Image (cartoon, rainbow, N blue to C red; front, side, top):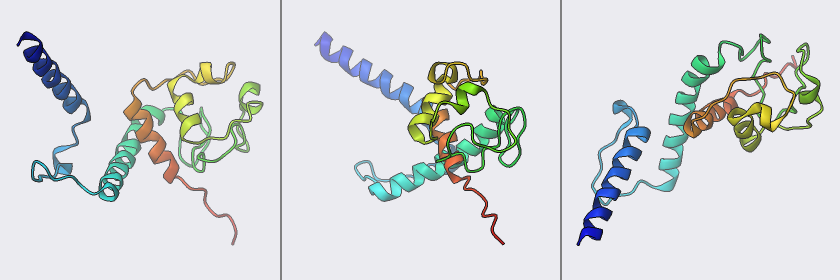
Length: 153
């Protein structure tokens, strides 16, 4: 009996913690019957859209002090970063470590970079880290939307 009560209390506590961290904004919540599940397509699209919107806000607050979408600043511009070879933006002074890394920016490499850039590419110049997995995922989702501008007339 004690084991059952402990299990119920543990499950309730974990559910409450998870819900508090991952609760969407009130305007994003949808009410549905208790046993109804959204279709995987709808759920994935809604989650991706939410991640991109959150990522844009997080980018402004966490990355915007050093980076810009379309201009080199303290850090290089980020338009077209997804799929780009690290250290390849023209007119930006990268560290030798980053230039020589041969890293191509994708979900995995960006996640490793944002988690701990110095551990991922020792000798590079960025010192900022994002410890929260959701923040990294959202920023990466936003960065994926920043496709390069076609420069052909």
